[in-house]
Structure formats: structure tokens, C-alpha cells
Image (tube, rainbow over all chains, first blue to last red; front, side, top):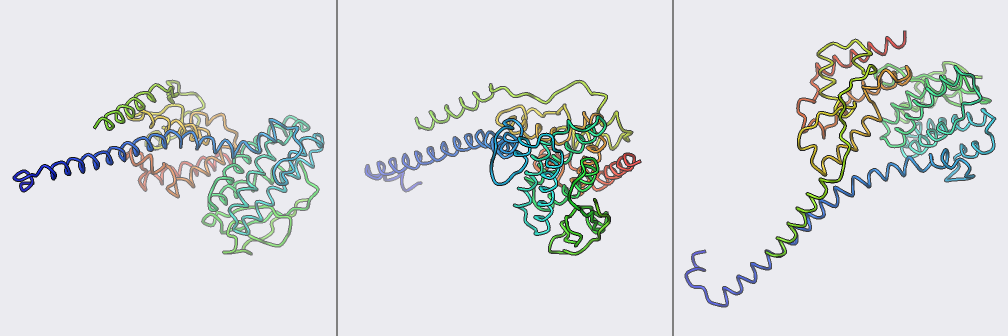
Length: 232
Length: 152
């Protein structure tokens, strides 16, 4: 500092000024870019986040309910077809719910989070388009309660890590048993139980095979559990 | 210097501008009959815990600190609260089916046990919302009691 003020040459001063103004400009530009970027990010990220979830959740729903008359959609969801052709056949509707559930179970057995998420979403949309009008009043009440809760489980499974997916899958066990008790099914299913899940509180699930393949622990404890009951 | 001023002005104007974008504050004077505390017998201390740690996002009435009324924070919060209420609204507890109550009680227990709720982004500012070990225990006991009640 002292040296410069004592004997500044004209050239030096100019140089210094230029340098100063360049660095200042740079800082200004950087600072303002950062400020604007931050602002945009906050604004956009809110909107985007919203849009994304809408897209995710909306994609199947729209086709299943709002535009219920579309024939096919993305890969092999059967519920749309059900809406169109089998309005009266509760078994076909129920089958699509049960099939999505079983796919979900298989994905969890295989420790496959992404597949589980897909099946969870498929289950939610199959439930969302399930027509309860053919049942009596009391059954309708119970079915709509089951569907409301089970759909929520499916939606959560669609967007969670595998631990959380399994928690919701455990919740689904009872809902599915009660659902099938009303709708019936042409499939033979096995109600299975693992006593160790959730700090030894245990968890129930359904399988199409009487062999145990544990969806709560996956490869960690594949064969833990027992068949409790045969359905059908 | 000029550039800096202009940019500062633009940013400032933008900031002021977004304050006028309307948000719907989550405020309600009415505590409905369906509120968790009306439907269930809840001890005063647990009621206090739940109100402080959960009700801001899981009821129709949020206690907003002043900075939460400022954009863009208010937007961020609006989304959070909307989502929170969709998942669980203590004010609407009495309207839930027994099945849904059971499912929600299970989720409350596991979220609290795993320290996933209250959200860490929330307790960062609301220090008092953080649940101590004892507070967690007494909430979990209540949740278990309510689940047993439902099963009987």
C-alpha cells in the first residue's frame, strides 16, 4: 500500500485501475449471476417438483380414470382394459389388483426397488379404477375404505426407498386379505407370515406359491416364514 | 459499478415482486370435532408435544414465524404443508375410517421411531419441535394404546 502511494507512475496507476475495474466487473457479474441463478432455482424448483409428482402420479391415473376409454397405455397395465371391456366382471378387476400386488411382492423378494416402485404404482392405479358398484352397501363401504388405504400404500411404495416400501407392503397384507375376502378370486393364494419382521412384530403377505420367499427381508432371509392359510 | 447497481435493483425488484404472488396461508380458527385431541383421550403433555412438533404441517392451522411469510420461503412451505396434510391431518382424524386410522398410527410410530419425523429441515429452525427420547416414548405409548383400542 505504502509503496504504491509514495511513488506511483502514471502507467502503474492506470494498470491498477484497469485491473480493479476488471476484477470488480467480474465479481459483480459473478455475484449477480449467482443471485439470479439462486432466485430462478428456488422459483423453478418449487414449480418443477410439483409438476414432476403430478406427472408421476397423474400418468396412470389420467388414463385409468379421467380418460377411462383409452385402450392401451404404457407397458402392460391391465386395469385400463378392465375399465373398458369388463365393467361387470369383478373377477377381472380384482385379478389386476392381485396381479400388481404379486408383482410387487416378487420385486421385494428380489430386493428390486425400482420394480417394486413400478408395481406399487400399478397397484394404486388398478385400485383407483376398481368399480365397486356391483357390491352391496356394506361391502361397498368396506371396499372403499380398503381401496383408499391400499392405494395410499401403493403410491408411497412408488416413491420410497426399499425399507419404506417394505413397511407399506406390510400394511398392505391385511388390506389385501380383506379385499379378497369380499371380491373373491379364481387364484389359489397362500397367506404367509414372517414372525421376525418389524422388531419381531411380524408381517403377513400373500403369495401364489406355497413355497416361502420372504419379501420383507429378500435375499437376507429368503426362506424365513411359514404358510398360515390357503385362500381358495 | 453501474452494472452492479442495475443488477442489484433487478434482484431487489424481483424479490419485492414475488411478495405479491398470492399464497394461501394455512390458518384456521376452528378446531373441528374431528380433531385428534377431541376424538381421543390425550394427556396434556403429549398433546403439547404433538401440537408443537406435528400440527404445523399436519393440521389446518400453522403457527407461522414472520420469515415464513416471506417469499420464496412461503412457497416452499406451502408445498410442504399441502403434502403433509394430504398424508395426515390431525384435524380430520375423526373422519378417517378405522382402517385408515390404524394405517396412520402405524406410520406415525415408524416415522417417529426412525427419526424421520419431524423433518430435520423443520427442527433446524424449530428447535422446540425436536422430540426428546422421553417425548418419543410417550407418543409411541399413546399410539400403541390407540391401536389396541381400534383392534377391540
